[in-house]
Image (cartoon, one colour):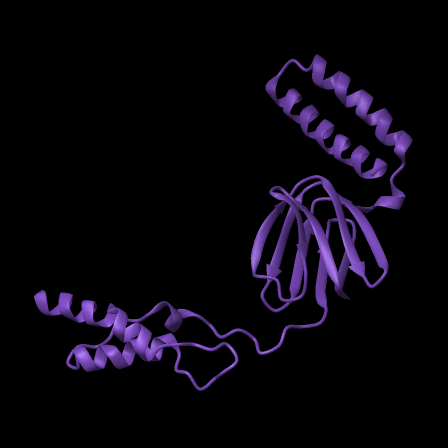
Length: 198
C-alpha cells in the first residue's frame, strides 16, 4: 500500500508535471498527457499495468467540421429531409437553442414555439407544439415534432377564437382530465399567439 502511495505521489509531483509537460497548442511534437502519464507510470511501477485514463475512452474529433447542417424535420403531416442549412433555432424546454454545424451531440425536448431554419438570408419559420430534437455529432439534426406548421399558414383570427373557447373550457372544467386537456390547449395557443405577434 505504501508503495502505491509513493508511486502516485511521484506521478503527481510538481517536478514531474512541470519538467516533462509544457504544451504549446500550435506544436504537435509535444507528447500528449496520456503518453506522459504512461512514461511516468512505467518508470515508477514497471511491473503493474497502468490504469486507463479518460483519453483512452474518447473518440477522436473529426479533423474538419462540416460547413452546413443537415436537417430532417418530421411531423405526422409533413416531412423535410436532408435539407442543408446554416443554422436551426429550436424552442427547447430549457430555452431557445441554436444549432450550428459541429454542434455537440444532444437531445432536447421541444416546447410550443417557433422553430426557425436559417439558410443564408432565407429564414423559414414553423410553429411546433412539442417534440424532440436529436443533434448528432456529424452535423445532422433530426427534429421530431407532434405538429409543425409554417407560420405563414396560421390564421390569427382562428387562434384568438380557439383561445377564447379553450379558456372558457378551462374555467368550466369539472374533472382533472378536462382541466389538463384544456390547459395544454391554452398553453399551445398562448405560444402560437406569441409567435404570430413576435
